[in-house]
Amino acid sequence: MSLTLLKSNFDSREDLIAYVASLSPHIADKTVSPTIGGEKPAQIALDAINPAQYAHSRNYLDGDVTYLSPYIRHGIVSLNDVRNHALAISGEPKQTEKFIQELAWRDYWQRRYRQSPDDIWHDIESYKTGFAADDYADTLPADIETGQTGVAVIDSFINDLCTTGYLHNHARMYVAAYVVHWRRIKWQAGAKWFLHHLLDGDPASNNLSWQWVASTFANKPYFYNLENVTKYAAPGLNVASQDNLPLAYSYDELDRILFPYREDYNG
Amino acid sequence: MANLVILHEDALSLNHPIFSDETKSLSTRSAWKQPVFIWDSNYFSDAGYSFKRLVFIYETLSTLPVDIYYGKMNEVIVHLIQEQSVTDIFIPETPNPQLCAFIDFAHNLVATHVINEKAFVSLDRTPDLGRFFRYWNKAKKAALSPDGVRL
Image 1 (cartoon, each protein chain N blue to C red):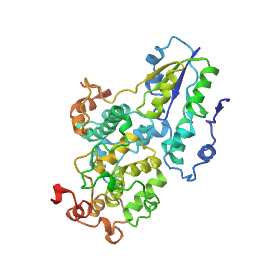
Image 2 (cartoon, helix red, strand yellow):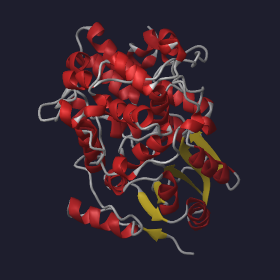
Image 3 (cartoon, each protein chain N blue to C red):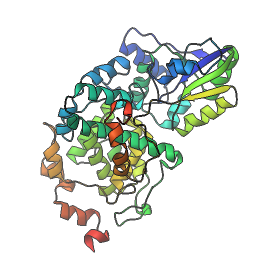
């Protein structure tokens, strides 16, 4: 065997994409994200952070989030760099706290991963949904993979995921809860699907967040209703009730529908 | 006789401590080969990465002064060690079991130094990781301080 040195200078992004395609003949879907890799784009994203605005708007789907996650995931910028930069530009430490706490979530997930790396695909605890793990399907149905569930907001989020490799954190929670609780599919199937698409997909943050939604790493399942999505929606998202019927209930109604055997809420 | 830095997908930066003087002082060899990344299609396939993910990683690599070699990680490293007379490998720390297995493989070939990223928080003892807020209650003061060192 002789060593094969690959090319690293390209005239354009298109040339680089074509070259990576030549190295990946087995991948049929050649969709490319608009997010560009490299230290320069990472620095631009870092320079643009606004911790105070982030604290106020981060839950809104068009909120002032940083888009730094792919760069953090691949070590292009470190959590330490981001935190130090946030502290340096913020006059008021209180306004930075929420921002830094979100960085700490990633540190926490990584510590959990280091503690038990081989457990990352296993249920940490049992489901608190009234169902056993065996009650959940092992695989993701095609309508979810292709964003054709018939639930308008979910299909919109899935389309974003598949075309950009990015999804707002709140949208990730909405999709994950839909997959696990509305469709009763094992979190592992959804986590694997997210890891495929997300540029920032990381087994620790991704899988443990799915477990948090599923309730195998939380005291109760995470779920939401259409009213909640509407509150945080970005302009243009179709939140019409008739196009999102499975979500268009009160929390009490959904609790009964999704978790009919959960004793603490229904017993 | 030379040192070789091997980057992997968890640490694609020249700002990683692997490039620090402190790391350089760990080796008695003065020669440093061009850092290397091994583009292992089997590794990416096992990880289940989409094409857009691969483009993002390659795009990042193309901005770094690294040689990108194509092939299986364990095979490429054996050849690199032979061809470049490598005696010491330096590689960023990672929790990824597949990369840890590769590091173990390298350990059996030559001296292999695993270099940690700067910690987000420096804590006296390992915090309770049972739930996030148990960790956060212990880590908060350090996390809100520069370099994660409690003031």
